[in-house]
Image 1 (spheres, rainbow, N blue to C red):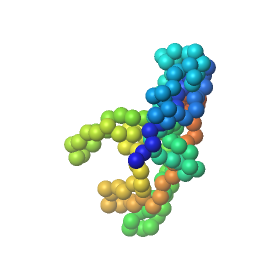
Image 2 (tube, rainbow, N blue to C red):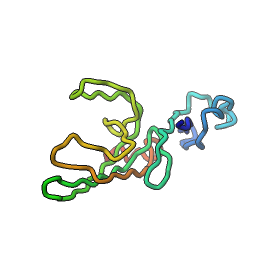
Image 3 (cartoon, helix red, strand yellow):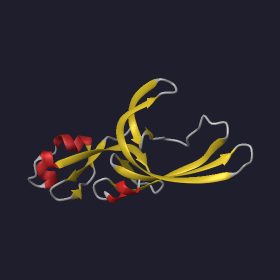
Image 4 (spheres, rainbow, N blue to C red):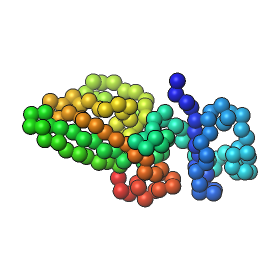
Length: 146
């Protein structure tokens, strides 16, 4: 079972909180976590249950550097691709197969939990890696790099 825990960005102090397991969060008072700040100054982010290539936990609001390594099926030509995107919870709609779901998203696509398989007759994904490089509050400049 996936561990449910959160972290929070404090808009008053401009800092990220420690990670808080849900069971502790239910029993904690906000004063014990952040002093006397009201809850309205906190922006909560949930743990996805996933880790990056360095073992760092991935949270909602994190920026992930994705690295994909692919090979062309007929020639064996290899390519690498690198993207930076934000992790968020949202609605994903697949128009090709006409279905919609709520899930963790990386950009506008579902956050994969294993090497992606493409419905592509030309390319195969050999490997992919993620690295947490910041978050939307501590590193807003990464929004501009996307």
